[in-house]
Amino acid sequence: MRDGWGRRRTEKNQWSVSGSLDSQNIIFRGISLNLSSNPVIQITDLTKRYGDFLAVDHLNFQIQDGEIFGFLGPNGSGKTTTIRMLVGLSKHSSGRASILGHDIRSNITEAKKHIGVVPDISNLYDEFSARKNLLFMAGLYGVPYDQRESKADELLKIFGLYERRNDRFDTFSRGMKRALTIAAALVHSPKILFLDEPTTGLDVVAARSLRNLVSNLHRQGLTIFLTTHYLEEADLLCDRIAILVKGKIIKIGTPEELKRLNEEKSIIEIKFTRDIRTRIEELSRRIPGTEVIVLEDDKVRIYGGYPPSIFEEVHRFAKDTGIGLELVNSIRPSLEDAFMRITGLSPMVMAIDKGGR
Amino acid sequence: MWRDELRGIYYIALKDMRTYYFKPPAVSWGVIFPVVWILAFYLRNPKNFEDLIPGLVAMTILFSTTAAEAVVINFELKLGSIERLLLAPISITSVLIGKVLGGFIFGLLMTIIVTSVSILYLGLHPNILALTAIAIPSLLVFSSMGAFFSVAVKEVFEAQTLLNLPRFIMIFLCGVVYPIAAMPGWLQYLARLMPLTYTVDGLRRSFSLSSTSSVSLDLLVLVVYFLILIIPAIKMLNKRFE
Image (cartoon, rainbow over all chains, first blue to last red; front, side, top):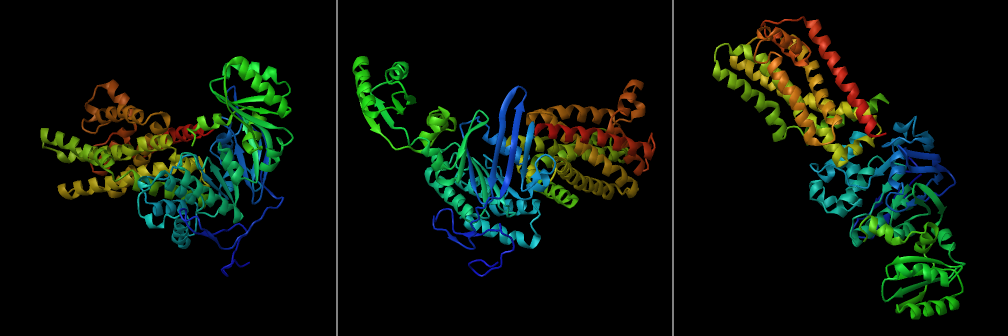
């Protein structure tokens, strides 16, 4: 098989992109989008206990070849623990999981050959230059000696770091460190990429650039398992999303499927002139058959019910309590709404967990 | 499979050499400290300086291997960078052996330098084969000792502090500067329990100086100590990633 530039491609999952992290203008060579029903990760009743604490609770799901699968959940929901078990950094208490047919308990070393992992921290070596870090990783993973330098340079160019290739890792900005950490995970041309909170701590521009790169890698046919606590990120990038709360998957589906859960219900967002947390029960009582979720101290979202009756009752509530209405909006369902309805958690929980952005 | 493991061990050792060894703290602890220590004894009693050379070489083996080894693993556990190595297609055992090998190679280079300078300066003619035969297992024992302490504790400074206890006790009790035979009986028993005693004994034999035990006993004790230190260190590191 030859790619768009006439080069022979030896493996379905070998990929190459050109462009840069900063340019946003990435041209693809040898695009190979492959979303078949061929599970590359299979998980059955995967469980992790720390003493009496159940960190991951009987997870069951599959990830298909070429898919971006997202784990969405607040801090402490078990996202990172699940990834750590799958990549061999932690042992599962019970259940089974396999990567490309290799059982993670009995044959994790073989599975590791085909996966690239980007942990939630950029943990390359400060003393090494960008290029030396990639060469070290290439050596560690057994990339043939005569291909290491070209592979490292290719990745440095893709990630827009070639000009800084001889600079030490500790002189890089947070976004550049993140980009190089992803590059390091790709040096051995893995078939599956695990990304743990890839954009946490990045500024808006760096986060957007990184998402573009992830999206481009996906278009090349790379299977990606992503964890995030950013709803917008999951919505933008993922083919399917599993919502994880307290170690348990409570919903799994495409972003559209999750959003559709709310379509049959009206959503009204109301901002009051002051804190109404202490009056929420009273408000809920006045509009039966609805779900009232607190977004902020002075902001709520009301799911379901008949909108004209809700408007009337909320207006009466404001008058009776002396709390003014600042804004009343009828809104379209989003993934955020789906998340709130499914988990009963405010998206603020996610923002607070990691400092927000 | 075993090729992947060997390659991993090699790259980890190489990376550690570049990252941690040949840095001022490792060099000062590994070479300068033993040299200054021995010079202090030489200045006190300039006669029979040759008698102190096995002790100098033993101290170089002890301090050069443990200087960085005692902190390297703990430091990387703290930073999370050891996970970068554990993500590679190799076992935890290979990661630890790679770390031990890093300390071993640095110790070997420092030992070669110190021994060569001493031999040339004093015009000594040691049995190189006997010297190598005792130096190699000794380097492995003390590099493993550093790894053991590094994995056993939670904080970086704890490893260094705790390791100083056996290191300094061994300097005084294992015949580095004072002959074991001149010590009280109960101290001699204590000295016999420590691995550096067998390193010093073997080195003295290679320099044609008086020794108290046999080659085979020296080697056997060192091999046993290597296993006593490396096996629990591997188990403890495995435990950290359960």
